[in-house]
Image 1 (cartoon, rainbow, N blue to C red):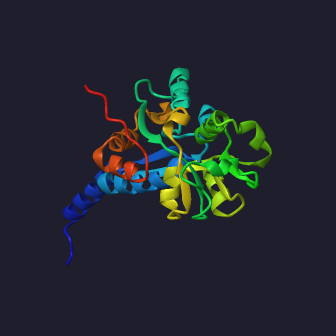
Image 2: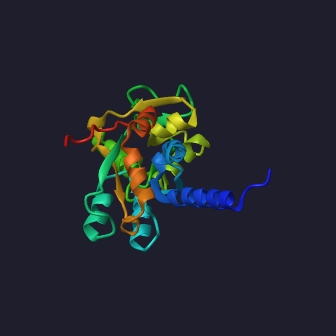
Image 3: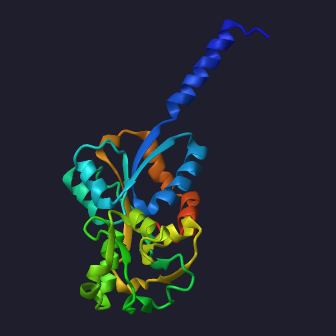
Length: 254
């Protein structure tokens, strides 16, 4: 069937309008949240048509990239300090920062018999290697250091530490067998489908891993970026985040 030229023009206009409404969001995401973001992003795209382009790494490295001009729209950090600093230094939109998740640290091994429920394996003199993320750039690594210091083990265990650049690399060290166990994010264990054995570290042993999101200055007028942050606080995203083992604080009362 031949279409009237006016019909073709109308169809073209509708397609153009749809394309104009759909945008892209470049998200810098802490390595612990990478798998969770993939699921959240897929749901966000289905709901809005906007596409999420993610780049993962340690929070410290992502912070450096942003201050050096990397064109990200949103930072999903594994701490609150760097988003606050970006906001204070003018790299992020004032008032856009919020806590999207509170992370949980676990001592994990793929070996179902290796890690006990109290973490006593850390005192085993036969423990040859322990993986952690770099405490200087990765908040989960800093939390692991705090735990080991609190247990009085930090100084003695130094020669046996295998440090990953970020928590993703620390997880790979353990998953690949390069280290028999390590401190990783609970979300990584759930995403990897390898229950193994684990000690869910009591939250009293380290400062809260308060993970904050912030809208970056280059995206102040990007409606897709704002839509993503709004979606991240909504019930669909929160349900996904909690399923991966994170706590999500209740939104502040207005």
